[in-house]
Image 1 (tube, rainbow, N blue to C red):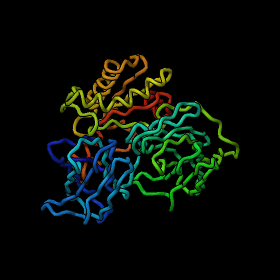
Image 2: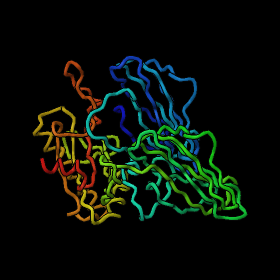
Image 3: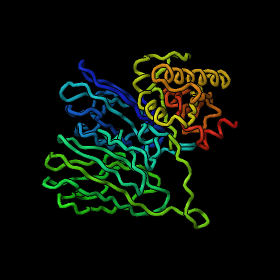
Image 4: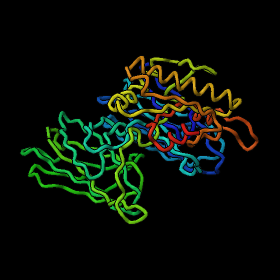
Length: 400
């Protein structure tokens, strides 16, 4: 049972497809956006279908996500408080790592937001090496006004990401240069989190070396994704830069740049990624927990001077004091695994247990109007949140 608005990561098997389920909210005839990403190169399509309780398919075509790594989204208008079933499989039976999220765009949220992938969470830092990703979830984060150099080859595309600032109705310019004479065009596309393109045509830069530029009006404080590739599958050196509006302070002066946080947005390790045994701090599958923690560990190891806070939270299925203890023990278990499996210094990591009453992040509504516990939403709240200890949110929690 998948909680709404929570990103799951998984892997297909050679033994057949996998099943999930989700329950719609109490909003009548809301539109749900089911988004998946195929995260494995050189595979067949990742396929997905939605069914009702009678096994009837809820849409006319199968949702396919190919190995290029772009998000693929299905929109469904569904009645309230109803359970639906997701079947997901690899078209040719191969093993594909994927992400999956069911978003309810009409849900009213309160609390601090968390990121569902490490690349979305990590802040873009000027002067730091930026590595392209193989899929939309893992695109290298580019700071605005920073020129990135790269190379495409072997017919493989690459992914980057950038986050807009707080200026409303602003125009952003994406500029690229093909630096390799005698090649085909170097091509670029910008997508939103649903895999929808943000401009009509691909931006093409030819081998003459002349810069090619695309202007787009984009939403504030939103992450977008850039896919780049060589039109004729040759090897091309390129540069890439995103120009945005200058952000002003309330007084009208330019905002002073502060030291960037390692995790610009707190990263959520929820129960679809790191699972614990019931009422325990023991991992249900330690190998799977290590796999989920690997990209987190890589980020922390790259920033040895930044202290990190691991904050545990829980569902409301119990006494608050007992939940504080359980959430702290689970945060400590994540810390111990980061130390033992990846060599992160123990003194770089601090843990805290919040239970449910002290949880300041967006939570699943795990009690219905009658006070009955809703397990699918409770799963969203059983998590460990990773954040820079210098984040004002972390400071607020530690101070309390």
